Length: 253
Image (tube, rainbow, N blue to C red; front, side, top):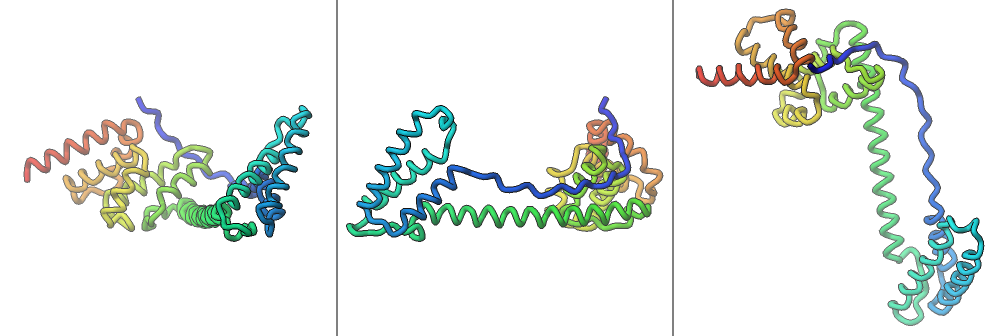
């Protein structure tokens, strides 16, 4: 038997400081090399490369430098820049602004920063919506709210705030909205997407409610409360019952 999902009141949401960006010694080393190499010609780059190789040989004698990643990264960068200028016209000076590798890194950094900002905005939106739904829960008026796009993620946030306990009233609200095509669930695409975002009990509850509503159009919410209990404890059985009712309805058409 499937263990029933339990509910719990929300505990205060902990405020966690944003994590700092991890230091990457190898990346720092490459940037240092690029700054030094800027304006150098092939001859100067070759001389700097020899110095870097000498330093690498010296460092290899010390055990405490065996885990160093910056030194090897700097040496590899000097070697890469030497090859870059070797393929360029004679007299070319190194310019990191025109280095294709550097430009690709900057583009990747910009894309990662944009994605991070988008994630932060989405997290803030989810938190604000979770606060809104929690206030409605406290007032006992959640069933009057219209679901909006992204409420599946808000459900997960409310579950996290409750210490991992699934809020049964939120699941019931989503199931009723999905069954009745309320809010953004009026859109078939939204309902299809919800199938991959909501849990089997919620989906089974919604499917069973939809079939029961067709079978008994004037049934009220209290009369259909058993559907939620069945879907919570036996989601597979609830889904099978919904499918059976749908087949019976189809056979009668």
